[in-house]
Image (cartoon, rainbow over all chains, first blue to last red; front, side):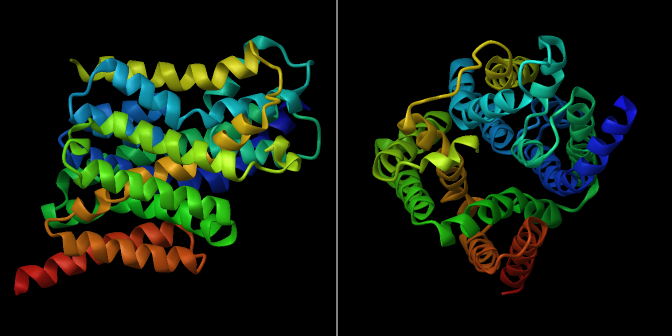
Length: 236
Length: 102
């Protein structure tokens, strides 16, 4: 029963694992193109398992930012995971103890969360652990392969691979922005603020991490105030 | 500062955000504002990180701009994550080649 549940979770997670491989390939290539060692790039992916957070972290490491700045940036960018963990916790119920929750929390990414919440049967520990297996392997090995490939490929291709993560971010934001006006407004606000922090004198002296934090908090807060989400999205 | 100090700080912060609500603070968030805020955070931070930084991802601003336009068009048409990312890489590569020929 336990083993069957585990296998069912693994099977459910495979498509996510494959997707993660390709995305983190871009992260690995980008990291080595910026002078990070391949082993360190892989270590970042294996210990963080988050796309946007890692990307911002990489930018800050390259800028030799302060430790507090990196912690604050991670707190803001990854704050949504708190909401996901809360929702997952509700769905897991009280039968599951604290110990198995520790590894499950580590793998609570956007996609795994979505799969877990879509599950009709009661969630079990083997299922949840199985769910995270291939995504974790895909994310880590993708970074490793991207970093190794990035070390041997010619400069022109490395440069091109560096844009991969931006392409992915665009693919995440554009479809919901097209369908939901609040998301479009959020993105537009963040875009304008980010331009101000890049090009306007004085504002452009604000460090990378702090400007990401300000853009994110300001845009999300204004839209949360203008367009509060309906109550049926609580489960999300 | 050593890169490992950074990696540990990043990993620990991210893990605490994920693990505390699953183990210690298990009450649902009642505030509609905070729930809405957290709902919009990913879109705000991904957009702020992408633009205008994407413009400076190639040797020339033109290649970054090309990648941006291609990616937005494909994403608007609902193409997959992988298609959009690879097409934006191809755009940078091709535009940089053309510029180097001129």
